[in-house]
Length: 107
Image (cartoon, rainbow, N blue to C red):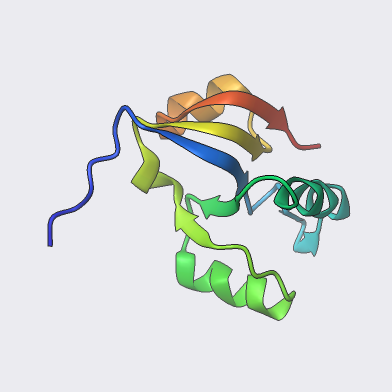
């Protein structure tokens, strides 16, 4: 199977980081969860991680979170509409090579 080459594409919706963003110190960050709920009424919400998908999937299921989960590395070279992450925009773009139209740095 050929891997899709998405470089140069813009993906609509909200892409939210998990470790340090949706979960902080192993606890759900209610502020971020609330943002995702509000966004999900008008836009697709996708969770993504640079970490281990299987481990994180278990954590999401255990907390009743059902948004789709993908690897950040699959989106290298792409632009997405909105990013929510704990990194600064500059660090995020340097590390993952992903651009965003709107960047929300989670506290």
